[in-house]
Amino acid sequence: MYKLTRSSSVYLLLPLLCWISCVEDDGSLGSSVDEEGVDTFNNGSQGTSFDCDFFTYGDTLFYINSEESNVILPTEELSGSFASFPDGLVLDPTTGAIDINASETGLTYRVEFSPTNGAPSCSTQLTISGINYLDEVFVLDQGQRFAMAVYNGTAAAIIPCDDDDDDDDDDDDDDDDCEFDVDGPDGTNLADLGISVDQGNGSIDLQETLENEVFGINPANGATKDFTLYYRISDGSMGALNQLGIRLFYYETMADVPQELIDEIEDKRSSLLGLPTMDESLRRFRVPISNRRPRPPYLVIVARFR
Image (cartoon, rainbow, N blue to C red; front, side, top):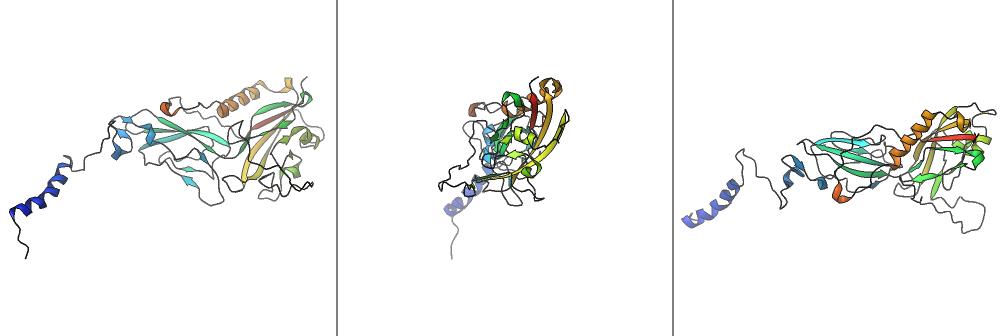
C-alpha cells in the first residue's frame, strides 16, 4: 500500500497552490497580458483601449457561391457594434456577421467596429467580387457610347475573361470564362429588351441600345428605366449566378439634365472611389459612416451636347 509521507504531500499540494495563485479576488482566472499590455484573454481589449489587429475577417476579397448560406464572421468574437459603408452590405450590427450572397457585389466596403469598452473605433476594408458600372453621363454625339464594366470595385482591375478563340471560328461558345446577360429567373435577358450588352466583357453599347428603341420610337425627355443584368464569371465564385441592377436615363441635351441628378452622380461616384487607402499602421478611422447608396448605377444617355 502507498504510504503518504511529508515529502509526497508537498508534491501533491504544489499544483493546487499554483492554481490558487492564478485566481483573482473575484474567483476568475487572471487575464493574460502580453508584452505590449494587451489582454489576449479579452480579444484585444485592455481597459479602455482596443488593439485593432484583432478586428479582421481573415481576408479582403470574398465571392458569392451557389450555396444557400455564405456567411463570414470576424476571426475573433468581439464585444461591440458594427457598421458599414457604403450601403449594400448585409451586416449583423451585433455579431459582425456578413451575408455575402445577400450583399451587393462588385463593391468595396469599409466595416467599422466600435468596442463596448469605449475605445476608438477600428475599421477594415473588404470587397465582394463582381462587376459594377460607374455612374456617368454619356453624350452620344461626342462619341461616348460605351459603359464599361468595373470589376471588384477597382477601375483598373481586369475581369478574368478569356477572349481567345483558338479554333478561329465565329463561335464564342467555347470562351465561357465570362457570360454576361444570361437569362434571369424569368427566362429573359437584357437583349430581349433591346439593351446591347457585350457577352464577353459586359460593356453596354448605349447608342445601339437607344436605336433598339428601349425608350420607345420617340423617347421622352427625362425618361428612366430600371433593369437587372444577370451574369457569371469563372473566378472564385465558380460561375455562380450574379446580378446587378441598372438604371438608364434619357435626355435630349446636356442642358436638359437636372443639376440635382449631376450632383447625385458625383456623390455616388465619391462613395465608390473615395474610400481611403488604409495603411496597416493607421487602421483607426474616425470619419462617420455615411448612408449614401451606390446602387443602382446611373447610366445617363444624352443624345447631343447642345
